[in-house]
Length: 177
Image (cartoon, rainbow, N blue to C red):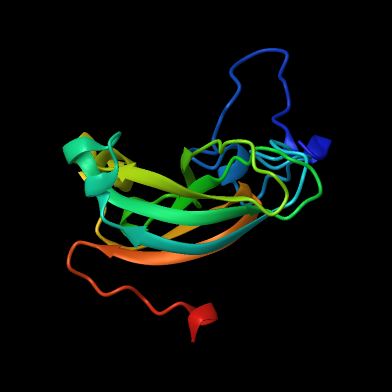
């Protein structure tokens, strides 16, 4: 936490009430972290470009359970050889009731020399685009417009892509008009 105000105060007697629901850690709009979730996983600068969705047929780890595969180019823009850890955060359609973008994947690159790059594929399985539905007491596939963010941490998104699942039309991206 960044300050005492961002903590849950201990109590001497009785129960501690955790009322934040899903709004814990990096998912909270009120919580201020001293270091964002995923921060500090590399020691040089990387540029991200070309985030796009691709066919999942070529992604071996997903099998028949793939819902969406995303690809992004990660280039070492620093002065030292290093690995990057691109992280995928997913914003759900409103029906899911998710408070903010949720971490759904990451990938550690090979060591990239200055100027070198790697094209990283991040696969979303059916469960990754689902949410727990209290009424049905089970997971339900979300339908609608999603936003995928890829970057260095929960507070440092470098690329964003909107996509649609379930027969809808993705909303236009304000930064792509």
